[in-house]
Length: 407
Image 1: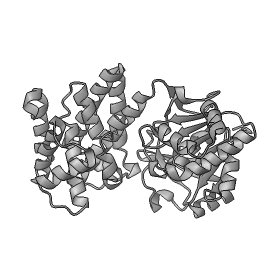
Image 2: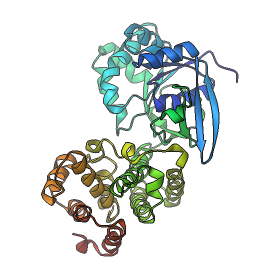
Image 3: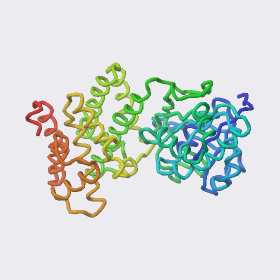
Image 4: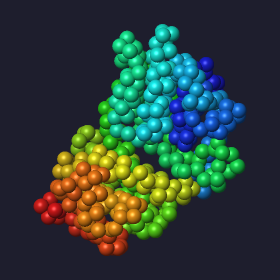
């Protein structure tokens, strides 16, 4: 491949940074500078100038060497600012909670870029956070003066992305003797917010600019993340370790599928998008959940229950969207109840209806209404040790009933 003289800065050299975005940058001909605070990782990338990605596909895999890379320590503010000031495109994949820590360094880089009369810079934000662009913008602007803020508005694009590639926790077996190796699934499309770019769109392999992008963000959260989380909580409840084991259970499959279908219908109505397109996406996702080679665990996918039971996140947000569109979220609320059950267990709380009601209110803000009642109704089945078949049959009955019967 003929590498360009232009550079990409990848803020975050973790699984998504190396296993997805950095790989796409390299395949598009960019030279890449990673920024991270994990010194052994930074040192290894700086020394080797490359790293391997293993694409897992059933019983087979493909090894790809990502070359023309370097890395700098995220605690070296001056080096970070210089890299950002001279970048042609940038991306972040650090975790939503870390954005506040990297914003000062990004601002310093933008200040330097402005002082040098730099051209527009687009930053692709690869974080699991709704309105991540707004959050990062406010964090950066706090460090810019009035003139710099004016330049920022015209020249800095904060571009939301929908990260669909599944990258599990990397085990020693997956690393296969190389701690820089990242194992990923084959899916590699990168939908981004077309309207957020400033200047020319960067040419990046598999990047899909889309407008209005709010649909893609909601589809990722309320279909992909919802289905994944539901599969995880049902798996944890039934003692499955891996996602592929959970989705292999016919009742778990039926519940996850129908939860995703409820969201699909609501999204189709709200955004006027073809339902058939979302259904094809669901079929693809369910097939990807069965990928044994990923060895993705229910514990990893179901982690961070406080965030995943938040009002606008994958479970409660999807259920509320359905209610807004006149759809009974009978199966989505099964997943939410499973999450409440997992939260109680994780925190050593007695599995009682009162404790569940308290946790649901604290995490989701729900204290009444049909979604609240549905979740607690299912939770009672989880707490009583009901089988998934019994829980699925309850969901079927509630789905077929009219809205007055639901609560």
